[in-house]
Image (tube, rainbow, N blue to C red; front, side, top):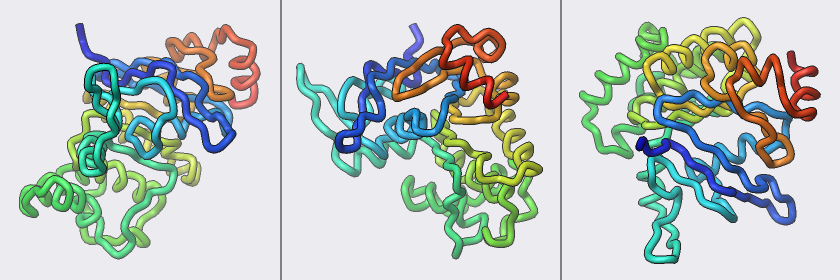
Length: 254
């Protein structure tokens, strides 16, 4: 049997008295593209941040590629990993945020190579070679010497994707990667993501781009109020939602 790339079992997360995730059960297989949809405040972004241990879960279990996120099991007990171990595991998971989070004082090439060189101790020659290949892949081969403030929002987000890919991740997380972009720039970012899906990259995408979800997604999950309300084939969920909450949400966004 194939080990799930991501498996969540009754995952819970609270901030103070506010329970944001109320028992998430979810499985993502290798090579699958899962699109997470739902209203603001439903817990989508928090769940993504739990997957790479930017947030610690308060209950349940969360694993990536068969290994617990942030913990190791010894007998019946769980022990939290040390920060260095957490960072090592996090390096295997690429994450692209709403905002591009590029280093403004670094060139495009240096932004893409910084992770492999500093975290993975890769040689500059190897990192530069792969970075140039990745920048060509995202359509920015001519921008290696540019700085972030010289790029459009769409170009910056494509650099952010190349930077995440430079770490050779086994899983890519996208947190509304087009929401901060002008409408005419959305397509160029979605095209890059579409190419990743075609190459077999496992992806979890928080998005409001329903056309992308319908075309590229293997599974659509609708979250609301910290729970999974409905999941299934995107085409089925979008055209024949089974739950009233899903129907109400889609009636506003489609």
